[in-house]
Amino acid sequence: MHIPILNLKKQHELIGSAIEGAVLNTLRSGNYILGQNVETFEEKLAKATDCKYAIGVANGTDALVIALRALDIGPGCEVITPSFTFAATAEAINLVGAVPVFIDIDLNTFNLDPNLIEALVTPKTKAIIPVHLYGKPCAIDRIMEIAKRHKLHVIEDNAQALGARLNGKATGSFGDIGCLSFYPTKNLGACGDAGALTTNNLELAKRIKKLRAHGMEKRYYHDEVGYNSRLDEIQAAILNVKLDYLPQWLTKRQILARHYQTRLKDLSSHLIVPNEDFDNTSQSVHVLHQYTIRLKKPKSQTNLRDHVANQLSQNGIGSMIYYPIPLHEQKAFSYLNSVSSNFPNSNIAACEVLSLPIYPELEITDIDNVSDCLKQILTRDLSLV
Image (tube, rainbow, N blue to C red; front, side):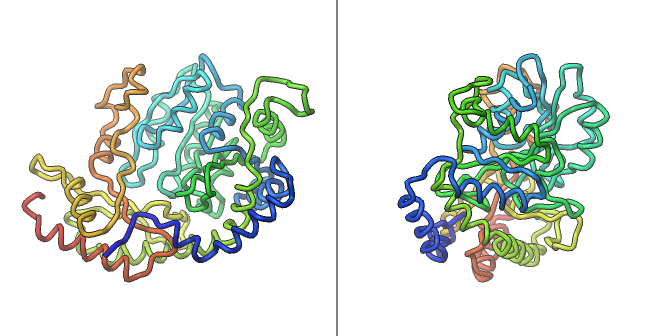
């Protein structure tokens, strides 16, 4: 048995000819920077995210940095963001000279706990960057209410949640700016690095376009110091092909997740599955960038999560820990002198989360095999619990 955490080769087997054709047409065109492919993709992406404007950039981290710059957030500013997420979110805050202020998560959602925001707001607080982690919309409606009350900007880190919706509205369209990554492992992945920003504000869109191209609106006239962060024409060509498949891919992910829920429900005394019904008629549409379970903290000193991950691997099943070390514990952010006890839920998640294989090319039988293997491991090793 071999079920990897992700298999991009399978995806290419299904749509590779269309991608190769789009790439070859781009190569033959002789137009490689900010051409028709990028323009078309930006139009399609804006529509897909309920936004008026989408601007392609080189990668998701640049998207976050440029979003902060576009909102004039820099030295002397504080930005609230979750401790339990990928480092790029806080890294971008640091890169513009601002200070990340970490906030703990809600263990039921893995997203930041909005109940904790107002206690962290100071006169220096200028923005909140919530993350729609694993593809689940955070409580962005509540976050927007708090931000409005305190006159704060909101930048949505939508890197893992393209296609997710809350109350019928797309993630990435609630805040001032939404930021996307098209890293190959994302639900919509390029064949290399790529990213984008989305907004409904024309002035922000204009500034973002300048910042991505060395601060230029008119060629060789630099209004401010910007970046060399343009979405590549070849990557845009690939994304244009893939974007058409995204709705059916997201539907397949939800089908697979529902099957996981059914197969794993008997193991509820040992693991916690995502608190979702994965039904598109619900208020919150989860797009399953990851299917992440929690393996409950064992009574002994043995780390059950790591043990299970190791046993799955020995049985040919891939899994991944997103993320083993919360940001407040990372060496890169040690200068903040964070107090670990202020982030109890982030600490628990880092010790207990495990993401299982979920991608559109999987079959129901694969989910059965993963679930059966999990059941065998936990049944055999109950002494660890």
